[in-house]
Length: 407
Image 1: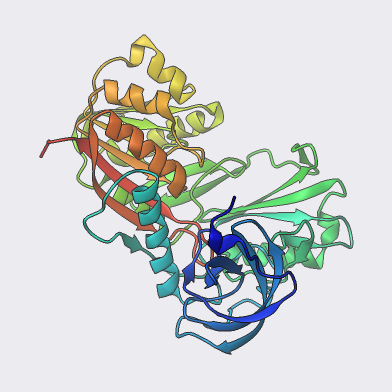
Image 2: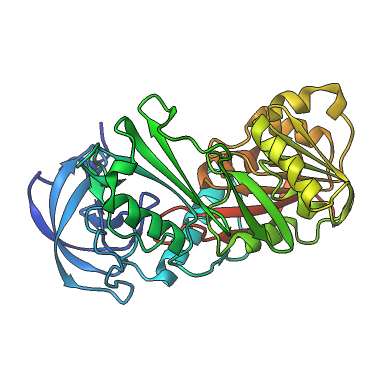
């Protein structure tokens, strides 16, 4: 039986006035009516709204916004004309300050509720320009004469996009060209992947089977300078997509790290490895994608860095191999959204590093892995958030961990 406060659900279709208390991790505003949580898209903390209940579950309800009766000081006019329907952004109607406060709270809630931590100081969220930052994007395409854009929120339909203010100018220009001449897009394409380096844009067309189609560029790479280092990365593989904040991310991840040996796990094209090499005698980068490892080696050569080597192996397999059994001073890991998991965390702990830096794009899996590190005798020294995706709910984090009791 449900608790008493949920025994009288809100009637479907009912209209009521609510006040938004906070922003949920989904991006919706949160209101409470007779003890029931009501999620309201495109609302801001402090708003007083007239809403209509459109979905009722056992422990929550969803509503659509009908009228803003009293806007909060954190509500603003969206910068993009597509915002109302496009699912690419969630928070353009919310001030930048309120967005960052929500992201800090989501990180804190995850680490305390799921990770069992008690943070002593508020989490700082570092940021740069909130528009014109995104150097990678994947657009959906419904066919010649159809829509090219992003999928609508909670819908399969595609919202045709004329402009996207979060894109770097080079990608906006490419989007404009594609919209003006859809004949450039192969008829079998369902996705258009855009990536911008410092000098060129790479456009890749992908069919329903996930295969590249149409005219395939022989060299699908772009080049980008990060700080004093020069990188080449594959436009079809992962590379951090916020041009404005990338150098800050690297500095946050490697600042103050030094010693004899460092291990960079999920190293990609060597973004963190090459910076670590400045302050370590030897750096080993491990990455499961051989194409990324080829580029990491190329990047080390181009930057004349000779004290780093790269291995093309799955991280868990590499850590289980005898060649990787030696102790290391420092470990940096930047896993995919699914996190590292128990096997990898325990293998890292067995090497007894003096410090671990965990770069994460998902607060929930970060919290789970931090709890695993705590079980292995490590404690959190600091947590920094980075607003790599302004106007969305996503937040990056860098967590520093050291053996319990160490100084």
